[in-house]
Length: 295
Image (cartoon, rainbow, N blue to C red):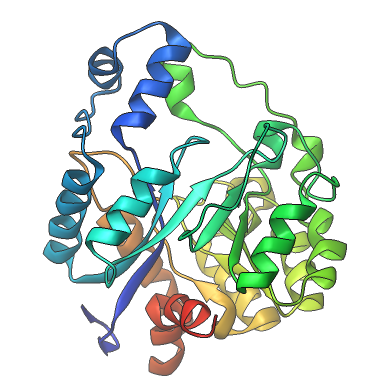
């Protein structure tokens, strides 16, 4: 992709893959048909075959010049959708899946590149002993564990009239400190710069070299700490450097597709800081590809 730093291989570390199973799960929770859920949200209903949805995302990424993307199965139990997408397009996608470690018979499905933990959503501490088998499996694979910290709001649930009984007691990045030290072979990713816990996320990453931060979303949490996105990037670069920042958009729904506005906003922030071409290339894509190529 052409950027202010020339041609860069852009890889998005945070794209939600809203499969048909995602719509079915929400429909079950609110008592509506999946098509009715899509209509209420103003989104396109995903094709029944996740390979067809993957084909749409390939076209979407191609239209913007994005080389690769991490696809997140965004409800527990939807691992097959992202695994099918990766099987069809192994050079374009990484398979991430939301996992609730408190559920029965939960496992790190074969073929996943990463599992995504949402402690506040599912009301558990990342230090809970029930998380440990997943972390041990991740360590054996040298895989990625994505841990959502900080503010967590799910606008979809509000639009559908569904409750969001989240518990922010479990959302602090420092909960990860002992866990990341205990599992140095696991690459931990904290999205959205810690989503309001920038200071704590930076402390964690400074102490644990296996912790990465993703830069995705509108990053509206900056209003809590009185800084802008450029300042957040500056602090992150000062503490952890460019090699542990992963560009992401938090793209999700169709027909909107890949969120170019998020990309443009982040590009402006990085330009304001005057970062080097080599650092821009690391953040925009090389880091994400490296954490998997080194596995």
